[in-house]
Image (cartoon, rainbow, N blue to C red; front, side):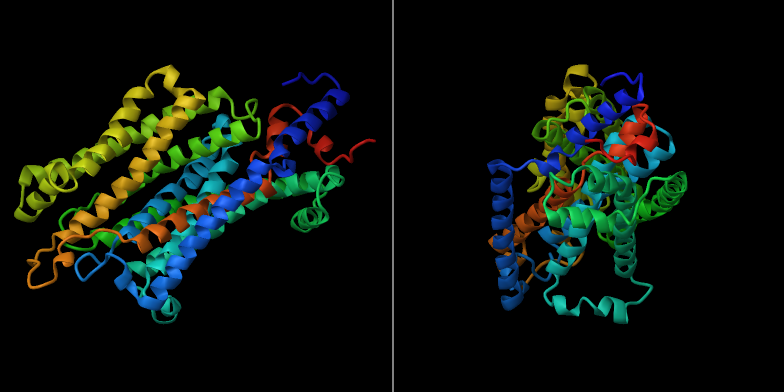
Length: 453
């Protein structure tokens, strides 16, 4: 970046930052159109699968009396997990005044909004009668953990949207004032409405700082509770594999791993696609790699506790469950999740080379896939081994295998998350312009200054 020695330098640098960080908004090419076309096509197929499921019933899935939670709930737990990264980066790291996290915060909020929204949608898709969803609010009981889950997910989504929108207001005003000839009229009108008459005076900035601090403090208990309450849906039973007091922090630690990996992947895509090498620097990937190692170590600690303690006591039901994981039908998935999703990233990311943008993006992609596999083996093996023997039932009740309908709806949920992230990237800057400019020494008065012809 250029050094600032005069007002002219400030204006020149601000113009460059604005041009670079709005490239994702003004850039139009065939690749972008093709990307949205593919996403919409896959989403349409998934919606068709859901329509078939509504018409025919849950019998079109692989779920039966014993395995009543299948791939859908694994998806739900995964989406909730990834969404927790918004709390970690946008709140915790900001409150600790860790400056390198600032350019990443908007990416983290994009990921959080997309995945927590889909967590709510996938639950509705899991219902055989989605028209009865309102009964949760009309006839829900406070004693039910499901009510707690719906409440914290809705609250977390609302706070995440506010954490995304409030720091966006000065950027919206800046684009409103500076990009009138580059934007279509509907976009310019949208920015004008969302900017809320922003003028850029000190009192308005003070209000934003205060509002953000309140939201950052508020999202900490909500963020921790969202995955803790999700874990209670499992832990509040006597089933082997779920009946443990550490399932709450175990879920939270795993969520940080999945969320950190997701943000790294999105950062790399933005850096490559929109030419943001000066903004998502090698330094950011290096620090995110170190953060990923740290959260993986914490999660590894909880994994050791999760399996060592029941393995040491080896109760009958726990023994069956552990045998299935370690050397039974789910052993391949289990060891892939542990090895590729935890041990290998910890070892590789200790070396500087693997914390470079491309290597760490590949490693994070593997971690993200392993995180989904981990959620699958949290849900399914426990349900396949109830305390009562499975007898006098059809053969397909003994084991669970997802059907094509479930796969289609699962693809829809992931594609929908990508659509939300892609739309946000096409509508709004992926890095906060005014915060980045301020960090580079540009006075706020230039942000509200009308462009000179």
